Image 1: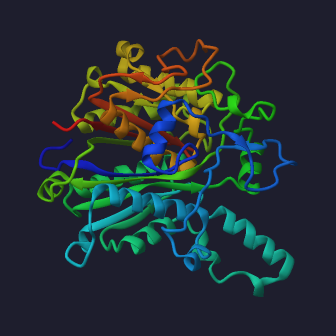
Image 2: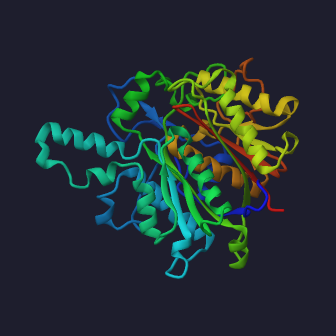
Length: 415
């Protein structure tokens, strides 16, 4: 953390996930090793190569979004707005004309309104151009979760959206952190939202051979760092944090959950989907986050890994961690909550940042489930199958995305 910059703290959390639609239920799911993966119900997947996913269950926007408005929003925006409202409530923050210009919003999404795009493409083909919905574009564009959150909360401060694939949620949090450090706002609502469990989304990732194809046993399909992993499981949902400058949070007597102290972001500049050999880009993001936070490797207590359950990611992420943390790497618990939630793409960084803050609050580490067959190339402590109580002061969250985008965020207990 550079001298002279403002300290930034986390005061609110919100989560819509495949294992719980509130922060409390999400944490309970993580620590009880719940499995959010099951056969797809959002569409008929009988003709797809992959027929399972990690869907949000029993999702009902009533009470959060007006029914008329809800029909004009894509599913990813609904997730983002509800998670943001949860986070604002948790922060006990009121936005009005006295402070609205000092509250900003950044919500990342890798894909945006994919379901809207698919649905309206069919309308265009089957019924003609005149029948395409006038709400198609605002429902589809990936910045609309940010826009709708800002409208819903009345936040008029710095506002943008990030579309760095699976790193989008973490980039959004990191960018919000920077804005607050520089004193350009007092509060930022930030995170990621995604809803890409659609016919095109599943088919596209299937054709790229990125997904697991364990249709006979979906519950065991997401198995990060395991030798038998064969691809990721697509998930959906949103994770949102309220960040504030320390001065602002203290002045209003806010409950502080944790401090965000470091942000590292790089690009592999190597390949459109594959990570750089040895996880070089990811390693640099981790190094930069530690440098930003003025932390050394001996101070890291836990890493929430990107851990997608793909052969390439898990091997290279392990190498990245070992490159930076050296001999300490094998002493640090590393787990992938994607083993339970699936991979939320642009939403993953949001819910994983929430998990990191909850780990600090509760002194517990969520496990990597479905871990049964160790891989010689993945030789760290992956907290297999059962949650672990552990004293935590500093935790890291890794997110890596197609296009070579790498992000590491550092959180710590308030001191």
